[in-house]
Length: 84
Image (cartoon, rainbow, N blue to C red; front, side, top):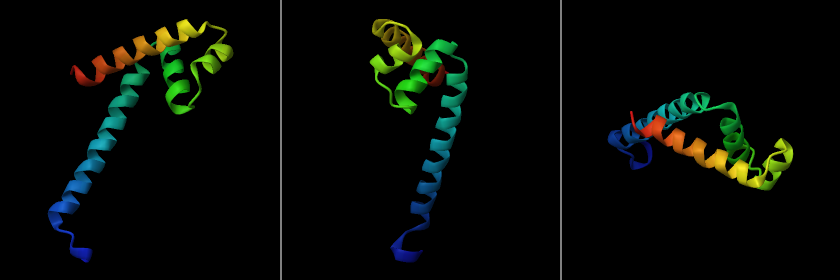
């Protein structure tokens, strides 16, 4: 192929794309199964890039509560995604 790429190299790229797509789909399903407050903290922290303090201020909860929700949510995500 163009630039000296092999067909196998293109298959590898396609495979990575499929793996990423499947991973995103599994993550979306796993996130949707979390309790709303855990899902909200994870979304705010990782996707909106808010700090724990900002999340706590927005939610009216303590920083420690926000951290606990994130930790429990991440543990649940890990189980849902990797323990199948």
